[in-house]
Amino acid sequence: MPSQPHLTVVGAGVIGLAVAWRAAAAGHRVTVFDPRPGQAASWVAGGMLAPVTEAWPGEEDVLELGEESLRRWPRFAEELRADGFDPGLSLAGTVVAAFDRADAEQLRILADYLHGLGREATYVTGRQLRHAEPGLGSSVTAGLLVPGDLAVDNRRLLDALRGAARAHGAEFVAEEVVALEPGVVRTATAGHAAELVVLAAGAWSGRLAPRLAGHVRPLKGEILRLRSRRLTLPPPRHTVRAMVEGEPVYLVPREHGELVLGATQYEAGFDTAVTARGVRRLLDNAERVFPGIAEYELTETAAGLRAGSADNLPYLGELGDGVFAATGHHRNGLLLAPVTADAVLAWLAGTEPPPGVTAAHPERMRSEERV
Image 1 (tube, rainbow, N blue to C red):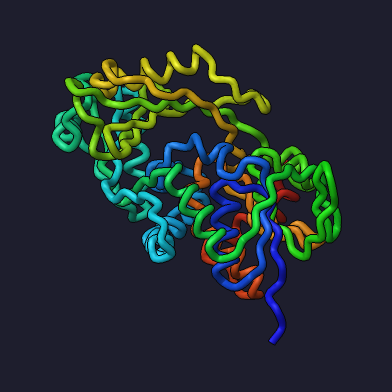
Image 2 (image 1 turned 30 degrees about the horizontal axis):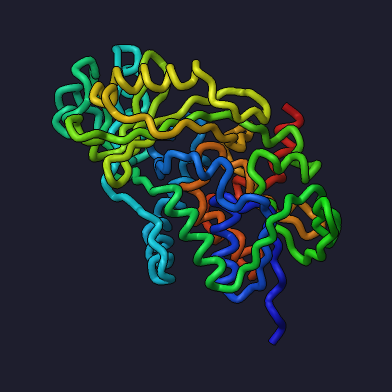
């Protein structure tokens, strides 16, 4: 029986770690290169698993891929728990709040679109939304109830994936890959033989694969972490997404009274400084939706770089010379980790990838370049 091919994974965010765990568990020899495993954009993510509330007309392929991955999430989490690692999956669901009439109209458009596709999202009044989530402010005019959109504790997930990958024999090399050559990944100190490579370097992927240059770009996002105090309201029970005068904001509850608040999004190259303007915008918008956070303790500010693509689909598939792309996941890296890892296993086995993956093949870059 031939041996399983050696897999080299470049990047140890949620995508690279998920690929490393599933491939190692399937019997592959796996080596992961990253100077700081689990410490880039995935570390500062909100943890939303929300294909429905991320949906928008014209992005049906994004919705299909996201829903396919969400269906895989319960088993993905259960298999991690079976390996002895709990990723902190929450089944509480999501509510979406609209602050003013214009925001409410956007939600109504989204609700009509989702109903037309047969998805579950209930448009409700502000009063009905406050019944589901009592801490919402009186200025909230309307909302959506989306029970199927879930959440995960991103930091517990990253720790779980890293631990599970190591438990199955994956090796970690704390070096940055500076170049990909046929059969070789090159760091600043040496070249390393690489039979098959999965490029999961997020926003930096375009620097390593010329075909991705200009197609994967960094999108800066700032997040805050807060904690309720003895005399404050507790965090919301559900994940709360909101539109405040056209600006998105989300509040994702964690254990022990913690709350993740995000996220700004703008083009800033590879800058990861947290700005006063970004913090002010997040706090102002969140307080208008969930006033109780004004008295919370602010425990952390951070910024990360999402890996954006032109059409919000990731790039999943072969680039050539034994290199497979698993990058460009934008806001949905945590959501798409299961389906991406399963796609890699399918490529390694020579079988059909999961539904929705074919639309994300890098070959579509040719049509992007003609536009």
